[in-house]
Length: 403
Image (tube, rainbow, N blue to C red):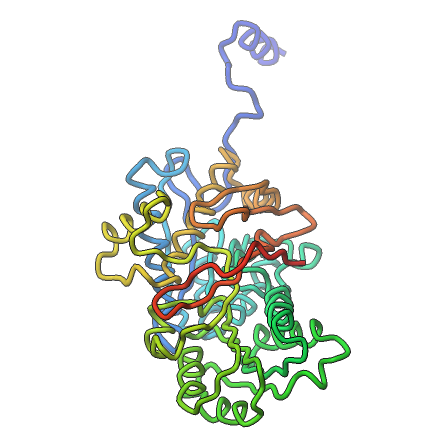
């Protein structure tokens, strides 16, 4: 009784000025001084060119930490190599969650690696935030409420539909040849192509040919597809090597269809240069991020990105879109964590991720912002068609709305 009276007196006197709602609430991996963040990246293996994403994320967090962190808490990124191998991703995720005690897993690279750990993370109610995949499976809050992607562009089915519509607007009778990676992501893209073509799919698809991520080349598949003399060549892969080989081989054999490249491969440094700049001229790709401009005159955000790369990663190729994406996804996480304020439980982190409202990021193209709801986990739904002009990617369309 005396304790209750003392508390009432203290509140009346204003001695306890902090309301209950403003109290700090932390989950695993969070304290007054840090937020532990788990990540896996292909620092080795066939997808290793994409690992620049991880290095840029780390550098971005270093810069945030030097400015005081997020709410006074330093971002402690623990990033492990998974070689783009799903079993290694699973091993790394367990170590990060059970050994390192991270608050959440962030920005795992690729559909297959991310899929390998999704059930484990959802079963343990560990957020799997802004994983790097455009597969539509990640928009499933009913069955995977702890998993959310932040892709470079709209999901694969939307991307396929936009590619097909863009091609048919130029040539309504076009026949399509499809090269796709033999995994869930590649199969989803192919399914999106078929759905977009509808009743015409059997007639309009001249041939579809798959390849494995570990295949040393895709030359034989491209030669077979070239023999169809299709009007449109759709190239889906997450590995820069396969994308570059497909462009180069088609050019070498004199096949000149309209070419669409998967959004994740719209990269001058890792795809167009190895393919040959002349060979890649005219290639199209859907994107939501600004194409890199070496000397931006009226874009302070691109200037800031270039300055950041020169300061933090002076030996990296600043024209590598995987780096530009790393900067963007890191920026998105900082926005999300600030939105959480002092409630940094795993549940609230995921709840805030599902309530993003018109969030602008510095390197998203005009008209594109992050938006999510508890029923719709797709932060990005729209994009622009980009075209490689022989030297750079340039915007070739108005804003294209995804479904």
